[in-house]
Amino acid sequence: MTQFTLHTLTLTLLTSAALAEGGFYGDAPDATHPWAIHDMNRPQPMRVEPGTFSSQEKPGSPPSDAIILFGGKADEIEKWQADKTPAEPTKWEVKDGVLQCVPGSGYIRSKEEFADCQLHLEWSAPSKVEGNSQGRGNSGVFLMGQVEVQVLDNYNNPTYADGFASSIYGINPPMANALHAPGEWQTYDIVFRRPLFKDGQEIDPGYITVFVNGVLTQDHTPLEGGGGHKSRSKARAFPEKGPLKLQDHGNPVRYRNIWYRPLPKRVSEGGEYSRMSEEATTAKRSEIAKSIREDAAKLEGNARMYRLLESLCYADNAPAREAAIRAADEFTAELKSTPQDKLESKKGAALQFHKAMDYLVKFKVLPDDFAPKAAITEIVKAQEWDKKK
Ligand code: MG
Image (tube, rainbow, N blue to C red; front, side, top):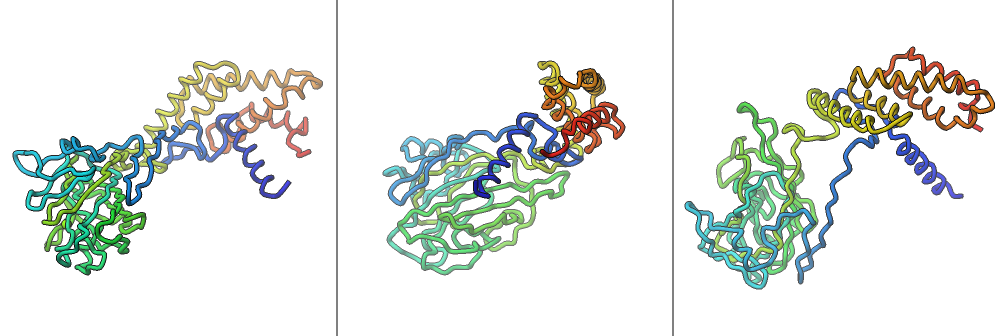
């Protein structure tokens, strides 16, 4: 057996042991982490069927949970309107599966309103090159209608850096120019987080991350109020949600394959992450403990005892503790009264209990002098089950 195979096998055995025992494995929850390390009580990630990548000839497909703002159908123009008050239909056109800016008709905005998101879109500047600097293939993607990720034909076209394609306009230039030639499709993948304020104070400036044709150009760039033309913006609260706007800057820029996925709340908004506030952690731990106790109520014997003991790692609960201690006392009494020649048949159950006791005392869920812990340790030593064979 090669070293690699042996290592993989050991890992597999360790992992399946952890699964079989359902707990008492990685470091326990603490004041700011509601879950243990490698915690099987932690929810499984939600399933998303991935989409496909685009080629120049053909747009890709979105992931299964994406909300499609423009997928190439003519009637999807209904998802957009002119950015005017009162609202009116847009004069932008859908042709050959592509949404095209009609210069002079004004910005468009999505009827859909949203905030934090993963946004995907593709755009193409006119293949007939006209104008220079900000005048060549200019449009723009306005997240929440508030902050512009610049769309501009900068293939061979210098301009001020903070107005470059995929700049956060008036805030930050892109880290690279990864554009294709005009007429070709450019892909923007954007991660957007709006600014968060509490009691008039900024608690999170909001951020934008951008990939252009797969190349990172904005890395969690703080919004500083959202930027703008000529003026330095100041930190400010954004609305709860807003439309996506696309800019008419006088050039017939084309768009395709526009979709987004809403993002979960940040920890400062009550979202769940590995590390949370002490208050949120306490609340979450209570919730997890309650759900484990409910699960324990459906079980019997040692399975029930282990679930109850496990629940105590998240939050104490007098009835659960009493029932778990009673079960632990009963199990150790049963082992102690088992004749020597029959004890070997209980080795697996005894070692599982020993491991759980060690864990619960180590993480101070049970006191150092917990009687069943002393009892099981004595049995394991006497049987020499702790010695490697
Ligand atoms: Mg623009």
